[in-house]
Length: 144
View 1 (cartoon, rainbow, N blue to C red):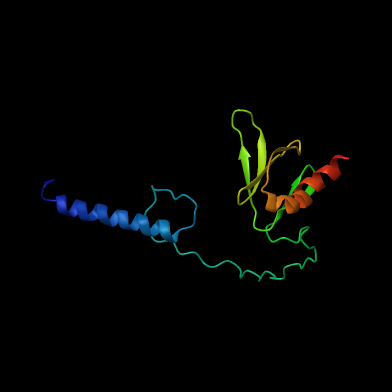
View 2: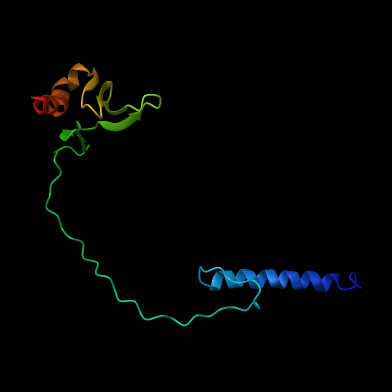
């Protein structure tokens, strides 16, 4: 008898799987009780949501640096990045130390994030003036 009804059982299982899939798509995100009879759930719409104002407050605060490359704060000191420079952060796993790395071409400056101390100053002669003015001088003034 089971062999005679195997195709009907297969079709029935496929139909149940399709109904479960449909119910999951149409129902809300609440888990459903699988012991209940399965039928598509149609919910009546709730009250119409009111529109949210799309007004974004306008701020007149200018960025602290003229360069489009950006800026960082190290121990409360704003450091402007030289034009065309990139910024990355290095975390040394075994010591937990963190460094901000400012690079442009062959020039590289590493600053300890916690102490604000420059731990590497390898600046090409053509970058010396700009790097000194934007990075070194603000940190020296803050240390005074």
